[in-house]
Amino acid sequence: MDRKLNLNRAETFSFVNPWIRYFLFFFSFLFWVFSLLIVAIGVYAKVQKATDTVRDTFLIDPAVILIVVGVVMFFITFCGCIGALRENIRLLKTFSFSLTLVFLTQLAIAILGFFYSDQTRDALGKFVKKAIVHYRDDLDLQNLMDYIQKEFKCCGWNNYTDWSWNLYFNCTHENPSSERCAVPFSCCTPVPGEAVINTMCGFGAQTQNYLEANKSIYPVGCADRAVMWIESHLLLVGALALGLALPQLHAFVHPASVDSSRLPSLELKLDWNRPKYS
Image 1 (cartoon, rainbow, N blue to C red):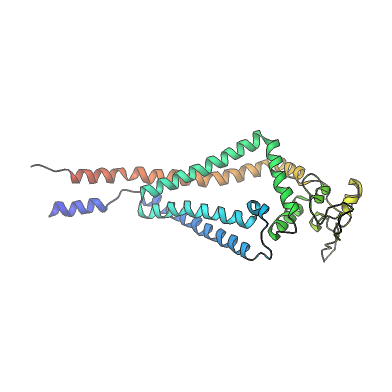
Image 2: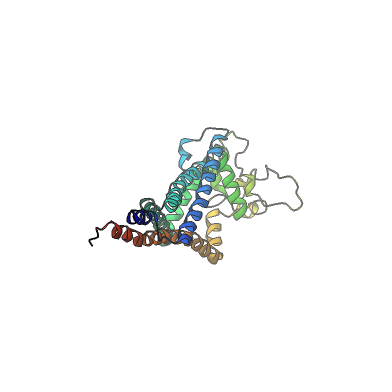
């Protein structure tokens, strides 16, 4: 009877460090909730769009990107959350493997971006060109381009004439649009004391030369501005990269700790299950 009672206790007892277990659970649960929030924002943005998404912009649609990132985060953090709570080694290993895969993917992208900077710039240029072409078709892309141009004080990808890629801003004589040869208001330099934004401030900007355009808009392209910003904020970029990497490495180490800490309890179970002869 006593032996049976002790055997039951051994089967339910675990030597898993509670600090490791509950920290991993809290960490995973926090990001699990965050992933649900990201998915909710993405779905809301997708539903609330006034126009249908153009097929060519589907992969660069910010709402779609949010949904995909949120779903991936949900799967990974769900494995970590339930795996830590239930001490499920299979889920913890899935969690650890997924984090390792994400971390290695980010590392590969960073390395490729560093060694193949010209190709990276061309790829980003294609993304921005699509955003410019569909500027009026997708409200999310419009807001994204306006934000980038305001923050980096730039216009277009190479320069302000890139806005001729857009159907409405195209600067050919055949274009009947009232915005012909214009650039978005986000390209305009702010006027001191102006309370209301002049959305027509960029009209006719593409017909001006660089020096003339420099008086009213940002003539420099966002490609050059982005490179200048990265070069002048290398410490910040490095700190952000380290800040993204550390939680992933930390979460990767903890499932292994939980896994190894279960070994004594498994050995104890085996020991209790061995037949003992008097």
